[in-house]
Image (cartoon, rainbow, N blue to C red; front, side, top):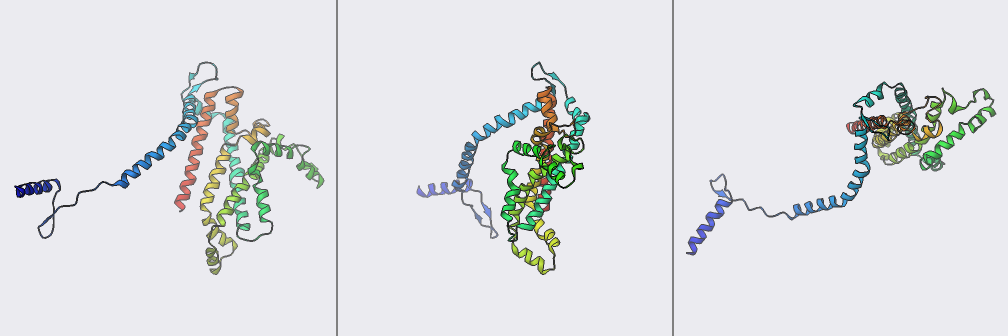
Length: 328
């Protein structure tokens, strides 16, 4: 009887576990898989992490995603914020490309990209290359002075530069003291010079951030790379392009992303100094957005401008990241 039970148990085991043939013709039964406590532990940690993130994600959805969706929806309507909205279709978006004021504002944004992004990046990288790897006297004080705009609010920066460019401000006083009184003017009230004046203010504001980013990155470049470049006969210029610049690729991507987005979304310094004037000589898309949302309300058109700016900012960010990754 015991032998019969053992035979049945053996047959059941054979059916449950498929046999694997070997070279000798014998069949080998693979061992049964045991439960994996690690897998269940990972699953529990994953769900626990999502539980911790859930409140933050909910707040983010209510504060950012939901208003963004409402803005996209309103961009297809004409609405003054009070009366009933009327369907506009894509008219608000076509106006972005056909409105002369908006076309001029886009041109000013391209101008600001040069002063708010490219110039600060070039100056910041040059300063980092000159001071980061040498015991330059006063380098710490120099960096602190250049970084000072980053700890000031945009309103303070705008007021400071408005005073500098005033007809009786420090800039005209210095020009007069050097016998260049013929060059004095109300800089922010001049149709020709108002835009470059704001561009220089933006360069001053972004220069410090770029310099600190590049200085921190340059200090992480191994000295052996510079020694090897010098042994190969590289001069300072070649050393910069073969060692320093490749070593700062990550910082360059961050600096370009931040400064380009700042140039595309520039509003505070323009509004607090010129309000887009004189005339429309310093107007930007964000200033047009603000005026259409609050001065002469057309909320749908303002939302369309905001959506276009958000898409452009996203494309610029992805492009910079993609270029930096392809270089890697």
